[in-house]
Length: 193
Length: 193
Image 1: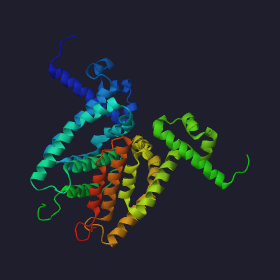
Image 2: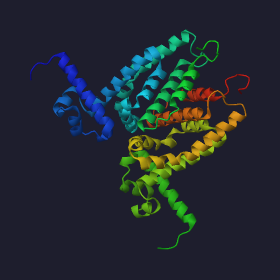
Image 3: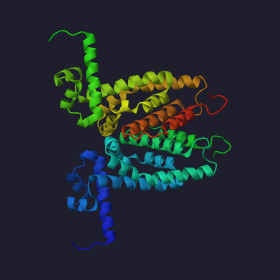
């Protein structure tokens, strides 16, 4: 096998991930067979599984990509902004339906579940840091512990993912997110802006 | 065929629904084959499909049962209480995972989607009636339109369903629901109780 540069490896990896994302979005987790993954990535199964051990590894890598991108936005603009971005471009999140399909496995497959939870640690850390900072600035309500605020935003995010995955994005969701945002802010009107 | 009473028909129908609920919870929508449905209900496919046209019809009947039960609670105690009940007995909602698995079909199958949406009309109507009543009593915030409050509670409910379906019920969800409840209430402390 010829030596390949790191750049080449990274490009190949990203080619696989992009194709796999489209493939999962179209056919779902179970439906995305190795043959369909080959078609979507334009690569052989040998090449695909040289980079990713198996379909699970591919799936978790996609989930980590998403989480990293979301963490970037969450760190500077908060988790509600992450949700607003999803709402503005739901078509970019078609593959999220796959996340719903794996709910059963998350419940029953401990190893898979542990790997899945790892993927979101970065996003959780970014969100907590942002919440703590806003609290120290007096912009966030003080009467609710940070872990509850985090759990609240996470729950709404899960709801939004389910909504986008089922194509049920109603017009008033933007106003709903305003309400979500207001409900974690300092309640006294004099401190809001 | 012998004549059967309405009571007998209702009992048979309910036997099928109970078995199918367990079967969907254990094997998922796609995994619940006709053979497994026969085993779970203790009835032949002939008997099952005498009462329900096909697997879709069975699935939608279960969803309607749930919606009707939730509507009863929502009418008198509100949608947050529905969520508290789910949280108190997540094991009774195992089959909800199936709801997630059908997200793709909801997005792509118009006929199925229409039937699915009909199922929740009763729950939506009960929730709106409750919200309007609470508003007239001055217990609900006036600055947010009822449809946005409804959309908000629905979104949180979807999040909770996703959470229960994936077995990810964290300890602080009860406190999270307190926050949800508080955020739809009148914000002035003098009117709260």
